[in-house]
Image (cartoon, rainbow, N blue to C red; front, side):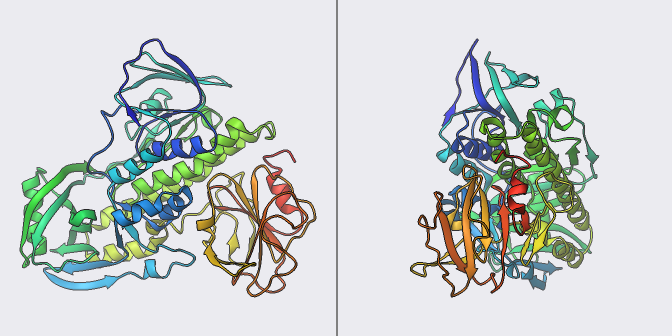
Length: 520
């Protein structure tokens, strides 16, 4: 729903206020609403995005959106792409895809090339609360219990928490006096979403064109037969000059521009907020997306990092706002761990994108080598939180399971019926997953209100368990076999609601991990 209400003197109370209706804000609203929070979304933009902006969902984002339940709607609207090619002076030089094809425990080892506007429209279709467009936040403040914001429409919103996803020029970040420092290399890019007629061989590959030793043009395949071009230019930036540069780089092939849907320019900025949480990391106002970090578009990190912020944050806010079984300092730990984890990742993303954008001034071979070196961030599958000092990571490891790493999308076989499935396809967002590897190690389950339980057995093994109820416990237990479990394995894994591993170990360690936050 999109609204443009004129309101004066209205006071509202909600659990969560979200400032910004882009992908980060919309996904945060959707997840928080599903987890039972009342939500108000306010956006200064005139209305929903129609063209332009981001152009790709990486493999990890696709995993997130499968859990959210919207990926199947997006897949037929986009183009799968997991191959990069390079051309130099008109000649083919290389083709590579191994950083995608080598991914393990991943159903979609590719980019899904799709416009940001399509992603936003899909999110908004599932959102059961309106987005109030053309409404600016003019003030925001907080105390130890509540956040209060006012808008230029005369609306006052009081909320338990607020998420500022209002972009690189964030009004909220500025109001909170949170510094936003970094570098600004003297590089300006033109970007075109255009339909072309060409005798260049068409294929769903990302192509980098080298000319005179530099890699200043990239061609990205897009949905609807559209082409996205990134063009690095010196001096005056115009659409005509960008098109001339594309023709020069793609010569001797012919290129005619039939219809350009969107043309824009962007100068590269690399900045990160000094904290993602107000009041020096202890407050109730939280930055996400471009309000927290900005960087070059190289590597397709912007939209994907914002989606990851929302997926990482929403369950934390829901627990902090609603769960009555938290320890007295647990809400602050939950929110602080978001700052610790996501700020560390954001800095890494900025560094990777910075290296990539500077390598466009070098050969395509060097540019591709940089992509390969940083493939974990390009695909999203290498992003991890181990070693960053998070309150929600208990450094531990067994087999393929390591605290701080992403939860693998395991292939599972049901004990009864032997039906094959994948882990991520069975899940919904919001609960911890407790995996008893090799069988139950305890006759008493705990934390049933925040956990879903799984028993994973070696392939071909059924033991004495039944899928669902009937295992001597009130809670449902999902029983599967998997080839990642070996005979003799006997330990427990806790996966957080954001699908990152929090704990691996034996005995009651899993309970002690959860007791950091929850009262038993």
